[in-house]
Image (cartoon, rainbow, N blue to C red; front, side, top):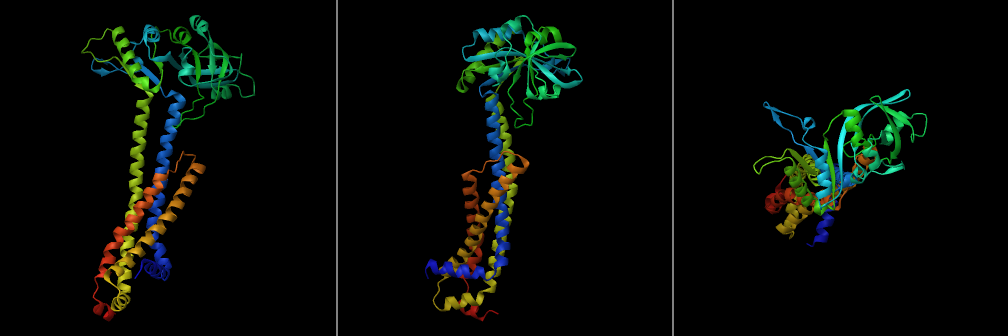
Amino acid sequence: MNYYNLFKIAIKALGNNKLRCFLTMLGIIIGVASVITMLAIGQGSKESIAAQISEMGSNMIMIHPGGDMRGGVRQSSDDMQTMKVADYEDIRDKCRYISGVSPNVSTSGQYINGNNNYPSSMNGVGVDYADIRKLTVERGVMFGERDIKAAAKVCVIGKTVADELFTNGEDPLGRVIRFNKIPFTIIGILKSKGYNSMGMDQDDIVLAPYTTVMKRLLAIDYIHGIFVSALSEDKTEQAIDEISGILRSNHKLGASDDDDFSVRSQQELSSMLNSTSDIMTLLLSCVAGISLLVGGIGIMNIMYVSVTERTREIGLRMSIGARGRDILSQFLIESIIISITGGIIGVILGCLAAWSVSAFAHWPVVVTLYSIVLSFAVCTITGVFFGWYPAKKASNLDPIEAIRYE
């Protein structure tokens, strides 16, 4: 018997029990749809993270003071005063693998404009900070070296701060706002960047000369950190090595002493976030994959029932010349048709579910070809694996006993 006839017989047998066939497919459909949706969410998260990292500067390096032990108590890095302006200047002047560097000093407080007020933070930075963080001044200008030397009371604000303080449609440029009772003149407004993948508002930002924040707001002689931009992503490691050498020399650390600072690159952050995303995606996909297992068990169960119901039919076929392998092929084809049809429906529903998540939940999703191929291959293998044993049982039936079966 050729495979074309076996295929027609299998289609006819499945058509005689449409509802039972559909219910058997349901486990495969749900499993495939769930796997595709989970992988789409995971891949979307990874690409969103990569995009956010790129927007922040894929070759950015962040340097912060390291925590210290005092009296057996671990101190916060924010309380450390080991990072000085001289460190920033030495990195700026001596590093060969960097394209920009900026100190960072930050403080929180209340912004006031007339009757409007808004709680936020102020970041004291250098002139390179906007380039390092990929920030663009949409209107007005960025402060320069002259403002830094004079510790000028000027600032550049993000869209969120502008909207909160100027609610009547006034133009913020040139206006004076107060931060912790200190007046600042707005000289620039940053281009909106929206929320990042971690839910942080990138427009809730105010930049001012670092000398202004150090002298006029905090009255300190140290900085909270340094932002550096490497010449390129592949030069990041060389830049980190240079920076570490300069800081260890400045801080007079011996060969056996631990660093009193921490250096982090965007590559490390990207790797950490992607690793977390991969673990969550794998976990969710494994949970979704259980539906495929349940669907496979359902196929095996239904094929067993089918073999039992059609024992006399099997005996008649074998008595008129059908071989054991023909019976085996027939039932295998039936189980494969069930799994493949369920897989096709599952792929369609999975793509629709991923689109729905993107449209209604506004999560980043990316349906990849490999997730569709993987899900389809798994459901096909499931059909063969769970359909083989019932099919083998059918092929081994004794024709005489099968015909006598009631």
